[in-house]
Image 1 (cartoon, rainbow, N blue to C red):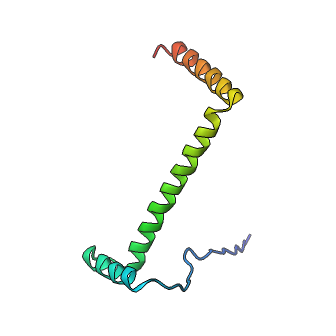
Image 2 (tube, rainbow, N blue to C red):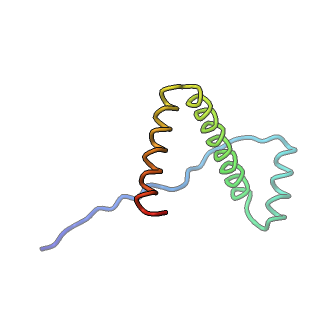
Image 3 (cartoon, rainbow, N blue to C red):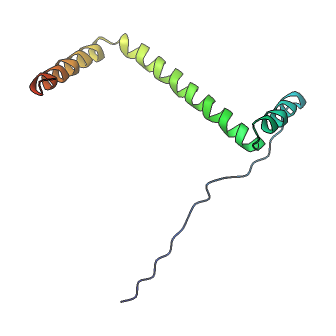
Amino acid sequence: MNYKYNLYVMKSTITFTSTLSANLMSWLTKQAKKENTTKRAVIEQALRIYQNETRREELKETFKRVSRDKEMLEMAEEGMDDYQEQLKSLDI
């Protein structure tokens, strides 16, 4: 039997055009040279840091909201009780 497979790979990068202030572009160029890397790599690293910080802030806000919700607190406490029982059964 001969099987024929078509494999489609999505592009992992996209191209976009944007503008930066002269000060930022100057800093970006110097930073890339300093790190011996590309401007793209510096931008990607900055965006990843920003993305992680944004996610962290979103989680903090979610935890704050949940901490004010009595039902959610009760569920969390019940979950901790279950977790402690599981640890006891494992003799940890």
